[in-house]
Structures are given as C-alpha cells and as structure tokens.
Length: 227
Image (cartoon, rainbow, N blue to C red):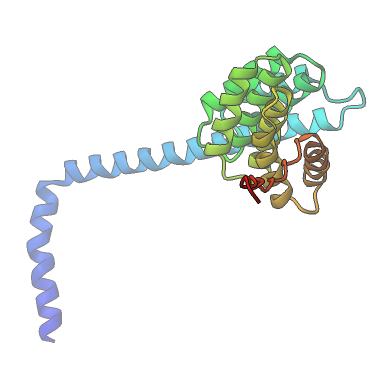
C-alpha cells in the first residue's frame, strides 16, 4: 500500500511538469521518429544498391560474350561504394593486365588502392600496381611497389607473390645471392603450391649459376736451408 501511494505521489508531481513541457516533448518525439526513419531509409538504400551491384556483377559473369575489362569497370563506375563495385574494379584491372594493357591496369589498381586503403583486397591491389610497373620495365619503381606490398599486406599469398617478383628482378640484375634468399622464402612459405614449386626450380637453377667456393689451400712451409 505504501509503495502504491509513493507511485501515485510521483505521478501527481510528474504530470504538471509534463503539461508544462508537452510542446518540447512532442518536438523531441517527432525528431526521434524522423531520425529513425532516416536511418531506416539510408539502410534500405544501401541494401538496394548492394543488391543492384551484385545483380550487375552476376550478369557480367554469366554473359555469353564473356567478361571484359570494360564491363567490369562500368559496374565499378555505376555502383561506387558497394562491395560488388569494388570487386568489379579489381577484376577490371586484372583483365587489363591480362590483355597486356599494363599502364591502364596500373591506373585502375592504384585507384582502388587510393579509394580503399583499408580493404581486405588492398594487398592484391598493391601487388597489381607492382606487377604492372614490372611489366612496363619500370624496375626501380616496381621494386619499391613490391616492397610496399610485402610490408603492408597480411595476405600470405600476396607477400609470396611480391617476393617472387622481387627475386626475378634481383636475378635479372645479377644480384643472385639476394634473389636466392627471396626464392628460399617463397619456397618455404609455399611448399605444396605452384608458386613454391616455381621458386624451388629457380633456386636449383641459381645454385648452379653461383660460383663454387674455392677450397682453402694449406700454405707450404718453406724448407730451412742446410737441411
């Protein structure tokens, strides 16, 4: 009974305050409803954009004419900020690379990297930039790009591929010992993979090229005269 009396007393004290501030309360409630609607609307828009981008990506992948760099890049342009749009940009860059358009591929890989530095695919984009520079014979820039891919990526395959690319450059420039170390790292990290097998083959070839160590000779002790 005492608890009920306390509740009744509290409500009697609260009601005058509600009456005095009802306009503010109504205004706050309206703002809250509008905010909830905006959040809901934005979420729905985001979902619809993701769905549309995914459908466009599926159509390109299932196209009877085959997937092209232009088709992928069109999706990336029409659906920016979506997961499918980001994947399409990477696919488009890779398609340009496969077609031998290395400068264009480099541009697209770099655009992805600039727009998505924290993406889970940023390591692949960094590797794409390095490989594109390498294919254009921009060796010094390629080495720096490979090093950035190695230091910035947590993807083991990206790191191994970047080390392999650097090893090829070191080998071509006659720095065989440096190339040997890089190939060894790739072979150790990928013992059963195709990249590891290729690195192992390069290791065997390099070891045949490296000069054999000259055996140390024991100096002759000169004979003393009179003996």
